Length: 525
Image (cartoon, rainbow, N blue to C red):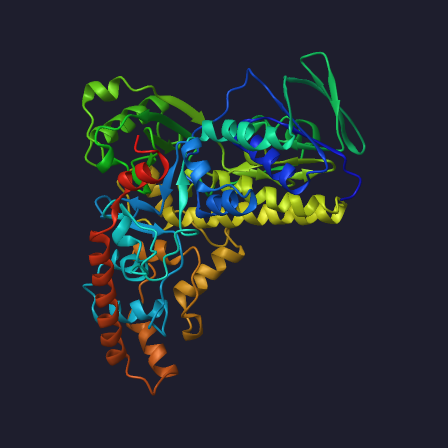
């Protein structure tokens, strides 16, 4: 490492303590100090994660689920269910973790295309049901480690994420990982920042001390007190792509844990945004992300309460129970700083950027940025800073494209919010690698791309946009004139029907999600 002896992290919470854990793991010889305020509350809304969070905890930090899960009140997450994004009452679709099972399907994803083309009655939901053995598990509130091999290529070690208590995450890492490994912890507010042409020199603290370092990590949340206030890079506003800028949130207690503790996040589109349902071990996290250009906070709260009283959530609440819930509001703005690292300062988490919680990417932007930071700090020159900034910029912009697609393919016009989204132009304003690849595959798919899988298929099949019509089959038939696509379609239908039935039968003997977690992690409590 180049001339780095001490790193100071400003801010605690999930971002701060994940940063401390990562840096002490990969740079144990460096003095790592975290400065945390007792007066500034952490934002503990982000309770749904991607599968990459589990990979980071298990592989990068070397923490087992047996230690981690009970410490942060976690359960496993296997999928995200999106309901009413296509149209109100659409029945929803799943976006599972993992890789499609292409066993005995030489045409890959196009195997299902052929089945759908020759059997148009095939439902949109059948796509994930055909390729992901985990579908029969999470749809029936079951879970299984697949040690018997009955669930195809499902790998329980990597095809799961977490639902967790974001407030407990930082505390658990501090007490069980960071402090035992030698991270220094200081409770104080930053009252002044001393800087020069090389960056930040030292921080003046509220305890009448000063602390200097060779490098500073800004984990101060939306305030971004080091990157934004001192380094002052330009902010790239992405609200034109992701307009939701406020959220109401509330915790709800379980009534029937065995039924209500599902192993997936539920996202339900409402009139002015969408509501989430995120169960953790002790309670359920609920919220409503919306855009205040189309409704007021007061009206949004009324709409949120109406949703909680409806049959769109797995839990049945009375009016009295809803009225007694503690609701709190979060303000947010989609966007990121043009440079997440300037001189000797790097921003991690909300201090560097934020999109919206639709895919549970909040902590992914923390962990992925930290792995990039580890690489950049090994050289700590301008090129490594440029590489870090380029990587983070692509990360934000590509994920903005991914998230925007959940809205862009809607057919809803039942409110000004959805009508505006449906009629918004995406091209040429949106022009990046992810979006262009999607357009290419959606409009003109080649046989050579049969086994490719990325962010798009579950979403676009789920909204009936990606389904191949006869014009596509006609092209394939020309390119492969020696093949009889109708015969191939019938063969694939038999294969898919058979394995769907096998997975369904296997799921019947799998454990209930709550019972599995109770027996494995929570000591039968």
